[in-house]
Length: 528
Image (cartoon, rainbow, N blue to C red; front, top):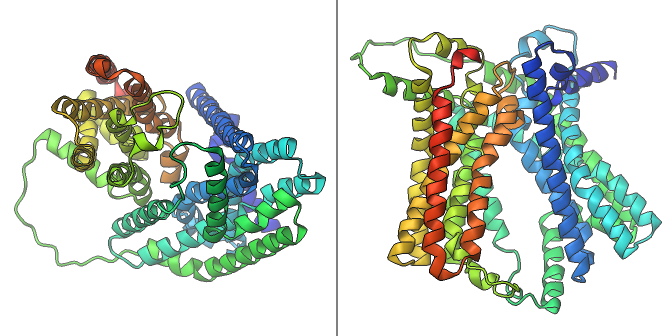
């Protein structure tokens, strides 16, 4: 127990760089940490507002019975998504394996301490999602004191199963990939396959009765949605009944099965810990090297090639940044089956969502763009870039070119799909191609500007850069926010003014991209 306590303290000490902010004498590092804290705080407030708004909306529409199942399911899914992509990296850390294995530390203590670290992060998500929902449900639906108490206790228990699943997923991915030569490729394909499966599963959400936003239709759909959530994720049944009706038996079942799943995964991880770590740290090499023809590359080609090698060397980097483009293509393909305008025709205002779909597509495409952390990913090797006899603008240009090369194939496929699905006029086709392109350019230059402003070069795991850095949050979401802002006028403007508004938006975005890019090019990277 003492080992678990000490190791857990070490794991949590620098969560979100708290230890650095507390003790560092570097004002820039402290200010960066404070800025990151402010950004996280703002995102937390937005998440609380969203969950509260959705919960109140269900209650106000007479479908309050869906709130317990909704908050339990949403909390579980967000926790799973938040932790699944990094669970393997945290459980099987590579940088300190040699040091820890040389110490008299039990393997189970090491595994449990890292599990607790993931649980704390999941608990934060559960608090943000569930507490506002439980409070609103208790105030407006009045389920009773017992239900409220069980609801608040559920906040502590609900994250266990999603965290357990994320650790199991990390165990499977890391265990299999550790035996393979191309670990990054397997990890990427596996994660993308899971994301596609989730989207296909969401296609079964009942929406056929929602065309005119009829009150009775909403209640019927809410009932069907509850049944579907219970079937997809059984823990929703146990905890939602505890919150909704004060069902003690359901709560106890949920607690027991959560603890059993926790113990089972801890046992599996402990048993396979040494085997997987040996697979990760062992490299095989053939010694039949032959000198082939030497290749002469231009400076820019060499820099772009260097970016590509760095990108594809990290499974965490690839899997977290490829999800946006994959989601964008899936979103475009969904237009063959869903008419967005029909789905929203019951709203009191006239909205032409099809006019703004291409811009929304581009916003999804550039979510978590890799350029937002391209500089930080150089880490302790950044001194090489600083000492090369190359201009800073050339290094930044190579990063822009490589990121554009990553995005363009998805952009082209998505555009072709949208044009076939929406069948727009010639003028609309022009704006469908041009506006998303300039949004992508804006997202790239703003992303690299965020990384120049908030670089994180001193890191132990790439998870810290890709998922927990200020530049990942700001630069990764900047493109989506730009697209969202551009979407609103395009949806609301009358048809006769559409071309004018699109033209104005294009000019504004070109100016923004040009100004930010020129500012980036004037930045001296030796000052980082």
